[in-house]
Image (tube, rainbow, N blue to C red; front, side, top):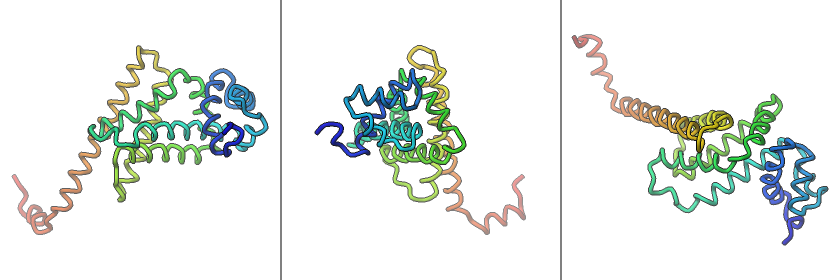
Length: 217
C-alpha cells in the first residue's frame, strides 16, 4: 500500500515527524508540510487535506505520533519489573529522546500551542499523553486520584520540556536531574496523600473529642 492510499489519519501520523524535521528550519506551516510530503513521496494536495487546521493540526499529529511510538514500545509489559517512579521516568525520558535534536521545532510548536485560541486543545493533548503514560505505567485508579495523577504528570512534562529546550549540558544532564527532582516531589505528594487517607479511615470521633477535652501536655 502506498502512502497516498492510506487514510488521512494514517497520513497524519506518517507526515508529522517529517514535518517536525523540516519545522526546525522553516517553522510549522505550508512550506514544511509541502517539503515533508515531497520527502515522503506524498501528493501535496492530499497532504494538505490531512491538516485542515494548519499548524496546530500538524503539532497535534506530531504529539500523537510520539504517543503511538511510546505505546508500541511499552505496551507489552516492558515496564513491569520497575518501581512506579522508574516507570514514569522511563516514559518521560522516551518522549524527550524522541524530540532530541529537534529543539527548535519543539520551541516553535510550544509557542503556537500557547496562543489563546489553542490553549484548550493544548491542555487536552497534554492530558491525553499523561493518561497514556499512567496507563502504560500500570495505573488503574478510577477515583479522584485518576485526575490528580494525570494533572501532576502533565505539569511535570511541561516543566521538563522548558528545561530541555535550553539545556546545553552534556547528555542533557540538567534535564535528567530536573526530571528526577520533580518525580521525587510527586512521590512525596502521593505518600502524603496515602497517609492522610489512612488517617481518615481510622478516624475515631470519641478519641478526637477526648483529646480536645484533655489535651496532651
